[in-house]
Amino acid sequence: MRATGNEKLMNQALSLANRGRLIDAEKLFARVCEQDPQNGKAWFMRGAIQLTCGHTGRALEYLRTAIKLEPGNTDAHFTLCKLHVSLGNPAEAMAHAKKVVDLDAEHGEAWLALSSFYADAGLFQQAEQASRTATTLLPGVAEAKINLVNVLISQNRKEEALALCKSIIEDGPAHPGIWHSLGLAFRALGLTQDAERCLAKVTKLDPNNAEALCTLGEIKAAQSEVSQALALYKKARELDPDYPRVHFELGKVLLPNMSAKHRQLIQRLEQDHQYDDISEAKSISKELATDFRYGNTDVERALIRFFDEYDPSCLYSAEWWANALMQFGDRRQVHDTALRSIYSTVFSWSLPCGQALDEVAAFSGERIASYGSGTGYWEYLLATHYGIDVVCHDMTLRHRFTPMRQLLHSDATVDPEVTIFLAWLPGELVIDAGIESLLNQTRTGQRLVLVGEPVDEYGNPRTCGTRRFFQYLQDNFEAHAMVPLANYAHFKDRVDLLVRK
Image 1 (tube, helix red, strand yellow):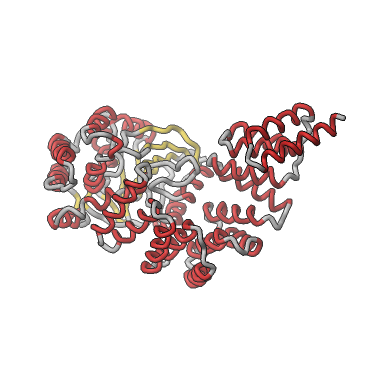
Image 2 (cartoon, helix red, strand yellow):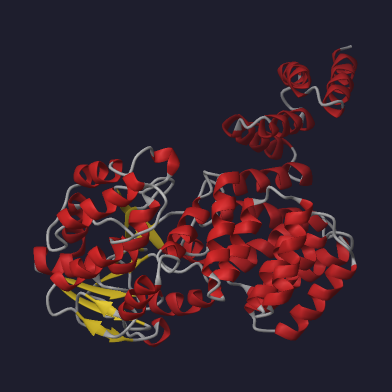
């Protein structure tokens, strides 16, 4: 009788789940598990429901129980794959996706997931194979073709990627996300007009798509159409005030949009020059703050006041920086973007809090090699205040605070005795190979300081770095400590201290 009763409960629970009554269904599945703890399907359904409801801890527990009872349950493995993606655990997600295709070689969604995992890890041959398998098994799923496009672009196989993009367009996708991906692909292929057409399609299908507007703004900014870029960024910010990338990009075009004088100053900063006296940098930043037409007089006054008081040769505490940022008003209005536009141009993207520099100096020892140093401002502070021997490198030389060697990451020779310093790596795939070439030379126990924003809760970069880069760090380095920084509104800047495994 009990088995029959459980069967009835299972059927009732499945019926409720199919009708979307998940909480009621979960209660019945729980009763089944109480009466028959070996019922793998009931445990799986409980896990899937908990995941849908956002209860990841319980979902993980129930799904693991389901797999322990039924190791061949492909649905449970694939649900665990999705769960680990949401938790930012790509290695675990990939392991479950591999298990799915081992059990069912025609599981198209698992092959699609694998194609993304392989691509993020820089395993492009495996990613291509998985993408092609997914496109065969899921002929009507544009995401599979998009993944293949991105893999081909990563391998510099542009003609093949372009042909595939055209075939996707011929299919007439209705989802705005596909058009956005196409826009990004055309942009990567250097076909700006095609990229703009695809992104315009996104905004037509989804007028409130802040991400697409931001990408359009980036294209306009790259074409030196600064006013149009500024308008697109502002509209994107109105639609999604919490979107970090739009604040990042908006800050980059505020200055060039000011006046001919501001543009000339920026062009001067892009020239190869080491400051003879740090007061040069202070003078330039004050000039940039003058006549800054932000449209809010309180913000404009706060800019002048900040650069009047700021001494770039000094160290300031996190509390000092927090108070300075408060002078720009309500954090929800993100007016401190005006400060960041100047500060990042002259000094650095991240605010150099004294406490963070103390931690970096204690961790790093006597020697640091910095790559992608930019202005070298953090490096200047570490050398002058802590006596650290800092050697700086960058691919291009501009106005800077410290001596610097012009060098590609891929051409670097890393001394195993130094601490590596990286800050605000670009979110461009082309940078990854050079960074990996550099970091591959590090040895067990060698230290790495990383300054910038970490990934979000889904494992995606927010404003700097790439998924491939952060996956590389996870695979090859152990966390020693994390040091918070004073942050502009909507940013999560920090310092990570890492040690090579």
